[in-house]
Length: 151
Length: 384
Image (cartoon, rainbow over all chains, first blue to last red; front, side, top):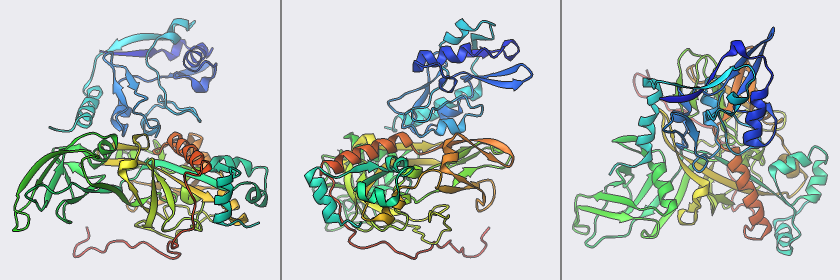
């Protein structure tokens, strides 16, 4: 199963509580640019919530140093001991959910911690689970092959 | 006011030298003129940390008894080039294990720097002077005689950015390029990049001391595909890949913090190499050169979906660093493939080493070519 942050754009009112909670929790600062969840203003009172779906895992395959892996919960994680900060993961993310703040050493992303979901006043966010797919499992082959040389 | 290398080295020895990173000087140049910078700053450190496929190292394993002329050699299953003397080999960064194309020379080199043990297997036909036909041994950097990194082409002076106009994903050495201009990747440290801070190589030539993956190495020659004739912008900075360096250093002195194996999906194995070069501010002209900022450095965005990767736009590094650029009327996300964070770290480490007198500066023994172009390859018969 894959744990992920489920978003519901139809309930979002753009209050930015989620970005404040996220950036304050991880960067000690209320700054939407340092939030793993993004709120995009589509105009006419409509908003689009962007956070890692934990499923496509293109970043896991892309990372040239195999610093991005998948936890047992299905959540995509960045290993800072292996990350060189090249940001290939930021380039490959099709929805812009792999984030980077200029001057910081590492990229960052949603790890489905649920802190924002707890505070969302409109229940537009929740922690949910979904089934693995063939695409979501593809990363494992790459990691397994690079992690250890053949005997 | 001109300074000599000797004067700068004397200031370093006295502890009076002003050493700054190229980023610091670029900010300083917003308020000071080149003449003022030349008067105040003695050395500027530059750095880059990117995937440099044209890297590798010579290794001498030592002779077994009786001897073996090693002709076919593998390390951890990865072939290494044995077409030189009996127990010498060259580990190419992009060589791969035929049974595991995601593991290769870059991983071997990183493992050696880390002090890890590798399994050597070597075969030869057996000769009167080298009668042995097979050998297997465990080796590491302390058990072998020499491991000398010799990188034929590092430190590209600028490099084009990459994008993809087609409807399918492209897997390239510039990373995965998403369809329909889904992203733009680039791979230069911009205003920190060594050869962009001395674009005509006045201070960088054969014999120039460099920081190579933590070791002190040297520029041993011009790099391959060295090109002085690429179009330049109004600041004299080439708009795409131009000059390069061949670099040499003792791998046994390297630090794994500044060298890292890389695997690019469906492309292959490579090696992230950390390089730093200090530039002595000899005069106002060099002060002007090291003052360049990301707003002045431009590169060409090339479309990897089209034959020959034609350039389709010109962008500044300031724009690339902003995270998106406008291309064909749409916002396209940008991201680097080289680590600015690591480059900054190297520039700072080098700054400390220069200040401490541990990194003496000297004029090149010989300048690199002032006129050189790159040829393509004419194919025999049907070129399709």
